[in-house]
Image (cartoon, rainbow, N blue to C red; front, side, top):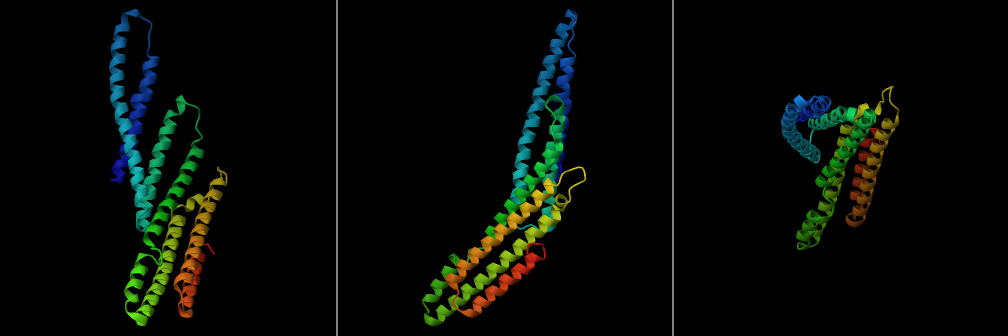
Length: 270
């Protein structure tokens, strides 16, 4: 369905160029001063205006559907997607950007010259931001807060069974902490790996372009990674103080955090 939708979006540019831009130019250049053909020219112009209104309505509707498609693709990145699926979605978003660039290029003759290369770089940067924001939602949605409803339910169930139940509740909370660390590590590592694989071209600027896009892309990933790790450390520290009461669990949490650090080091985030 992506292919069909993107083909229709590209066809809208063709319609706009052939029937609205070129048609408007030809109609304005086709004016003649001969009084004998004024009536015929007015009739032809009226028919052309009606045709243009229909085409303009179709193009406008397709543009609205383009925006819907973009929102749907970004929403899919908020879900659990594999690398091939992620690449498919980003490729579709890049093609939508290409449709937008083509539309800007079509209108270039009637407006001031566009810096298409600069616009393309800005679109690519916006795509990277949208990607990381959407994957942020996936992290937050999949990693439940330690000591939240699930831990509270375990603690409530165990409190009624005395000391043995209390020990069981503490163990369950410790397991939840370790499980949360592992989930967070896995998802952060997966997102960084996906970003590097999909946007690696942004880290190698062409000879004809400046290194600004390269620097911005690298800085963007660095800032995102630093923020996620800082969030992880703050959450882990808070939950250790609240829920960890024995050295064995503290040791396990430290081992899990060290493994998290070594995993991120493999993708250059050490």
